[in-house]
Image (cartoon, rainbow, N blue to C red):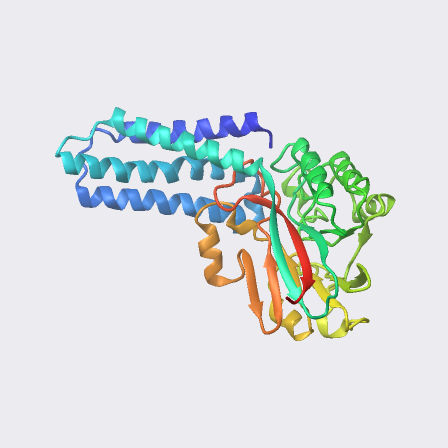
Length: 364
């Protein structure tokens, strides 16, 4: 979605919210009821965020406006709380104009922060040690680019240039590089960038890459066969429950995505051919960490969660699973990336957009 359309959607959401509040402005509202209203507004904002990022796919046409409502409602609830406290402390009467001014200032600030945050992709650095290594290695893991969904193509161009500038030994594309809103031209241009970056590139599928739900977007733009032809033409290695040796010390297993229930193999059937090497498993979704630990993985690299994307979903996701960051299970570690983009609109109010720069080195 382009920035102009997103600005108009946010303006529409603010207009709807202001109109409703204007109609209710003359009603006498008791403090207890005011508190309930503030809580309801905050919960409604969170509910809209959940419906976008975890709701049924049938809601996809409505998702941009739901995020716009979230962007307007959450700061409005906060502004309402702050202004109510000030009025109570000063024993002054609430004035609708002042309340809306506070709400709009907070809303516009929130809007600018979330929009700039989505359009800014930065490297995030990690170091892991192992006695399986005798030399230092650098690899890059990037997931959830969602080409054409929420960022201009110029953001990806800069991102790939920055990744190549890190001089890694390999780049691992960790799924959802494309999605249901990606055109064929965008897909081809994206993988052409990676093909020309001068670094070996490995690709695994996410749950959006195959455009399996494109009927709720713009219709299917390319087939899986066309996608894989493009990848191979650009020298990118596709891994679907397959191994690849990154060098003499590191072996990579790229998993088929969990959404492909029939195609995805059980990890117990995927025998590691080089058990003495440092063993990385790249799996778009982070939910099989314990199984991968049992299979001897030294490091799992995953994405999928976008670190919640919209505040406070990261905290909510953390209660039920691996939302974002570093995790440890036995001798295995897992890094769940925030992803290099997000879903549907250029708006992100939680963790920053990242690609992961990973240094592997011998134990100190």
